[in-house]
Structure formats: structure tokens, C-alpha cells
Length: 87
Image (cartoon, rainbow, N blue to C red; front, side, top):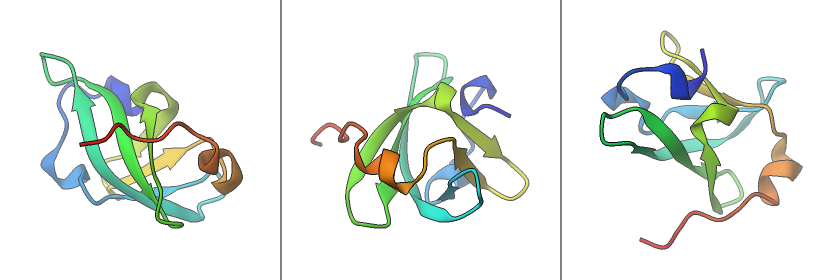
């Protein structure tokens, strides 16, 4: 299921493992940015290399049972993704 298709962000998603299409771990989910109704818009992901990037929720899948986020991007593509905004 696409992350942006869930109605409300489950609390357990923070810290969820993020994997590439082959199932290799690429990082963990740090924060989900939502609209006023709680629907996911963007997700901040801490990559295994230490950098944090922000991806659109529509570009991510979410397995609620396993609490795993899936991205279609591999590690190299993620390394070139836009950085998360400063907090």
C-alpha cells in the first residue's frame, strides 16, 4: 500500500526500517509530514550513510504488518535525493 494512501499515520512508523526494491535496508523513517487531516505528504528518512533525505509519501510503500517502508529508489539514487529541511 502506498504511504500516502493511509488515512492516518500510525505511531509505530517512526523508526520503521526503509528498504529498496530488492529488500536491502537503506535507512529508517525519522518523521512523517502530514496535511491538516493527518494524511502523509512527505517522509524524512535517515539513510544508512548518515544523511537524512525527504521523499514524497506517494513514492513510498508501507507494509503495516511488518512496519517496513519500501522505496523504489536504490542507495545511489537516495544519496542524490533532496536533503531534509533543517529543524
